[in-house]
Amino acid sequence: MPVKGSRGPWLWPLGLAAIGVVLLLHNFLLLENFNVMTLWPLLLVVAGAAILLRGDLTLGGEARTFGITRGSVESATLEINAGEIDVAVRALQREGRLIAGQFAANSRPAMRVNDAHTYLKLDRAATPWYSLADWEMAVAGDLPWRILVSTHLGGVNLDLSGLIVQEVIVGTGFGDIRVTAPREALGELHLHSTLGSIHWITPVGCRARVTVRAGRLFRIHADERRYEQPEPGIYLSLDADDQSPLVEITLHGTFGDAYLT
Image (cartoon, rainbow, N blue to C red):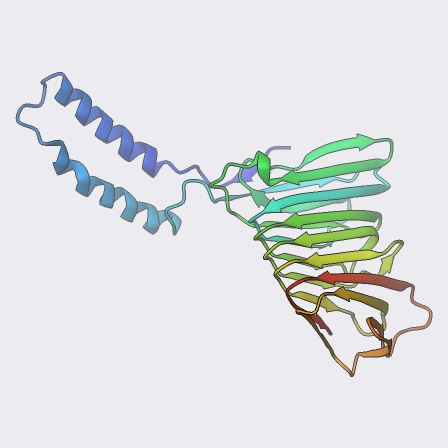
C-alpha cells in the first residue's frame, strides 16, 4: 500500500548543493578573490527557512501514515521495540482494517502471516537515528491481540478499553507507562518500569485484579474509591460488573510510582 507523508527535508540539501557549487567554481579559479568564510550567513538563511516551513531543524522527524486491511486474519501479534520513541495504541474504529496510524520515517511495520495469524513488528533499530516521530496506531477490536512493547526512554500509552487481548507485556527503562484495562483479557498483563511511573486505569464496571511486585523505592497510590486491598500487594476493583470477565495485571517497578485509578 502506498505510504503517504510530507515531503523530504529538501532545504538542507539545497543549501549544501549551493555552497558546493560556489566552492567548485572557486577551485577552478572561476571566482577570483573569493573568501569562503563569507558564505556562513547562508547557513543561517537555510536554517531559518527550515524553521519557518517545517517547524524544526531535524533532518527526518516526519511521520508517515499507514493502513493494513484485515482480510482473513483471526488473531495478531504487535511487537514494538521503540527505544526513545513514544508509543500509543488504541482501538480502531474503522471496520475492515487490521491496523492504521502513523510511524517514524522508514519504520513501516514488518508483517508476517502464518495461516490466520498476523505478526507485526516495529523496530527502532531499523529506523534512522534522526526519525523521532511518535508511533501512534489503532488496531482492530474484534480479534485477540498479543501486544509486546519495550522502550528505554520513550513513554507508552495503551488504551485497551476497546480491545480483546491475549497477552500484554510492556517494559520501559526511563519511560512512563499508562494503560487502560481491556474489555476482555484472555491472559495476564505484565507492566514493568525501571525508572518511570505506571498508571493503571480500570473503567467503571470492569473487574480487575492488580498484583504489585515492587521494591522499597517503588510506591503505590491506589484510589480507595476504586480499589480494595484484601491482602498486601493485591488490589481488586470496586463497583465491578460480576458478569464482566476478570482482567489480571501484574505491575513491576524499581524506582518510581504506581497509580491505580
